[in-house]
Length: 205
Picture: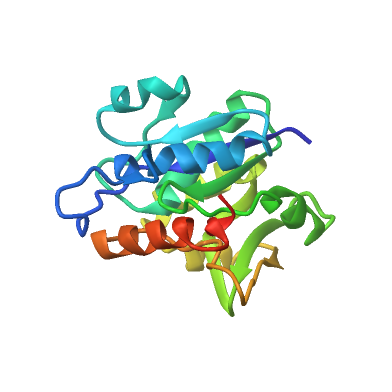
């Protein structure tokens, strides 16, 4: 297996009070830098998905791919773009995560792989009784099927597409620590993340 990391950074971040969300500062670094650092030790390269101003990410030296669908169409369109890009780079799978989840587990990939031995399965992260379909290990062989689904139905629901596939879940619940998939949608979330990092556990930073 060759697994490439894929970061979904294509959203508009409407609730961030005008802040470019991937570049919101957390502990002196952009959010996306925290995510990249967590993936870098687990995958064989990283690709970013963003739909405007790809040059914003130049400092990271990573490839940036846009959705093949026009407009901001949500995470499923981003997953499709990342699948296609990872396949072009010879990967068998792409580990997809959002750009606003700075506390991703350092053993994310290892535990997703343990969730199911079938390489055609989509392996999805869970925590605290919640499923996180935007944090998942996708076989890139599904790229064409997903593309056909999007073209034929226009249905951008992650749940609807996953309902057609074989899936498995890995539970990352940590009752005494911050949720590893805590995502930052508004300035108040950013303040909470700062508290997590400065607290006793340090958000496992």
